[in-house]
Image (cartoon, rainbow, N blue to C red; front, side, top):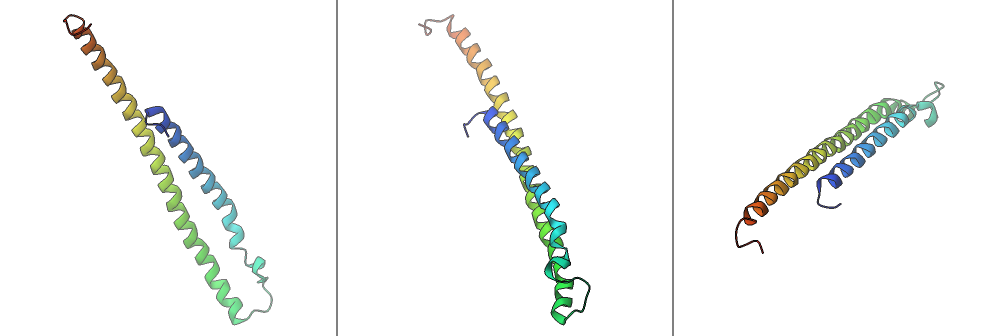
Length: 114
């Protein structure tokens, strides 16, 4: 990443894209992790282990999803902060250019501008 406003804004857009992609992928796949039939629990005769899996898996999947949502939210927050940083750098650079033009104009009227 270059140290200028536009590169920060570009990186922010990439962070936002990753956050959206991760969020969508996880959301699409999470229901299949709760499908107990995939673990061989199809409603037939069960054992104590089957009952334990049936009790633990859905809650565990929900807990993992909450953690992943926090990661996605963090990526979105980072993207937003990077975008604002890019805007700030652009504004500072524009102000610096204006100040430099004023200094050059002032020096144009003195013997120091040769």
